[in-house]
Image (tube, rainbow, N blue to C red; front, side, top):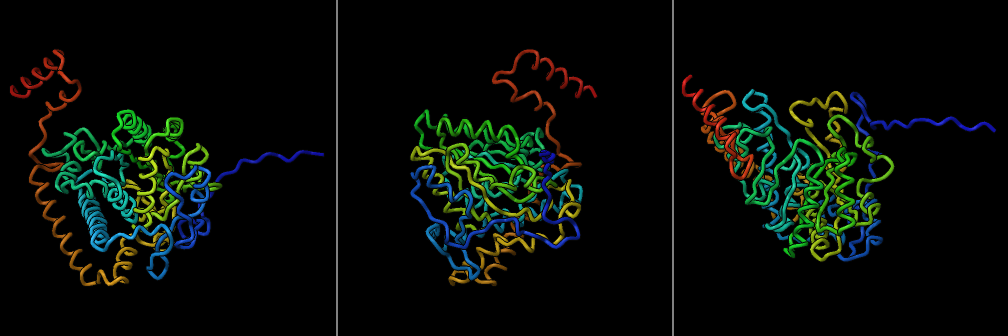
Length: 414
């Protein structure tokens, strides 16, 4: 009997430009349907959570099930404010990039709940290892927007001293590790930090963020192996926004299994979460952090969301997906969902929302005006170029001192 000829399987995006949006590939669970095991549960007991979807809000904006974190209205209003500020900040920075005032930008539109809810659920001593779409982490931890804008401008107040691309922020005092343009590097770094924290008995956890495409990178597999073997107290977040730049998430292995299912595959907990509902993200993050602090090991958390905007200002999503796909995404807009939940409970209104939006828009404009006073991309004042010799060694060696002094003499002589 003749054997069948082998075939190469090439994943396909569900919809291309000109097609109707199609999210039939995306497995969803009803709100409140997923169980919430104890944070110390065996890995085997978490397996259903890696294939289902932890959801809290139903279509009527009502919280359902055991994952409802029962947060008070004031905390939720703070979360809404942070998410709205993130979006308005993004819109402003996208606009100034198009005006040629900064060279590059990455928006997080549609993904605000991921960063804001997780940052609010974690403790100040926990170390965060962001990707370049996690500006909400910096906003929650209180960084001045003027400082973030100055980094994008590479001006005299740039925290990176002109050595990084725009949006590659950091803050050691606020436990925010340097963002890297090399995708995936933050995963092994976070695992290593978590291992060190456990060795020192500090009680802190680390959290790292990557996109779905980065799960195909070697750094992902190195990190989850170490996390599993040493049971590191770390939250490994996969922000599944359906596209890695222009490539559909199936090309990184998301077609036959969920990203979260790789957690149990490496013998630790996997958790698949509605990434567009603040309540669900907050509750899942608290659960995973509690698990890590108790010594029950890491969690691989897949946050199901959608990248509403371009991958970056260098990208045109209209070339690879339907233009109206964002409007059809079944999990909705994270800001609108929290807004409607608060309104349904009598804790918010359209008028208060409009007032907050106006207030934050004015605040962002004021911060931009201040940031430009420290210099702009094509206008002074500029950073001192001799800074290139600093921060390389703890103590500057003699050969660098000579190079720096020679550079200064040449500059002074014209």
